[in-house]
Image 1 (tube, rainbow, N blue to C red):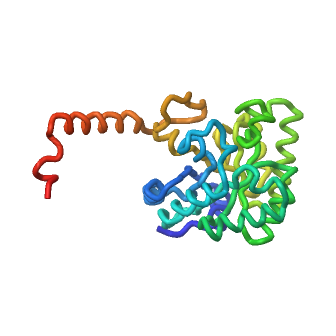
Image 2: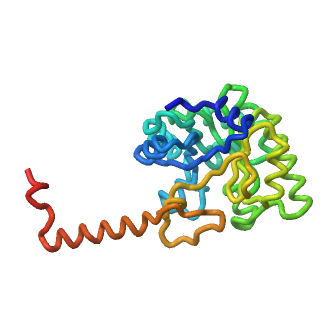
Image 3: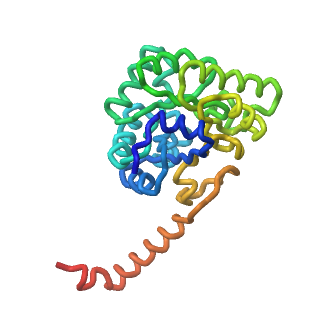
Length: 266
């Protein structure tokens, strides 16, 4: 399969091809998703919530992101690997943001980085992009801003908020980002933003008119235990149930002495 690069993602927008994106956090998942044909793998700081059990993405460290990114990079052959810059890895100063973006590329094997924020982060995006590190923006419901937003709430419902998000999107494109994530935004606004940009807009909870869609892989595979599924998630499998049934059979076989059998013994 052909290696997907940043120019290929830009070309997909130009040709009107939708861009499917999934998160990945480990070697095996990256290999499976890559072989299935996903063109872009996002090593999200959502790993903190779905893999480590944090209540938010805020505790995730740069070292944790490098670890997960390195595993994903080893597992994929074709997909473009984009790594989230975790909270406090780019907000403190542009110098630190540039250094940490370089670490995700050099140590983590990322081919691009993603950071949250619009107008306020434009110059940071520009500084990283000028090092030839491709940048994906992220506006709307930005999980690292959960405390300011008062929770995970849809953004851009009012005219003022909508105008601010349009300005955020334009500033991100002008700063040199190659793409942008639109999260938790009303569909009509997401459609307007997408149409106004020359770079791909990837939606999550932002309606059907974005250039692509991203989901957390644990959500779409039905691997989340005990959490309420967001409205924008479509479950394509119920692996939680499948795994539970398999574990139950294993327990039964061990308790009844059926495993290991002769075929599983040296």
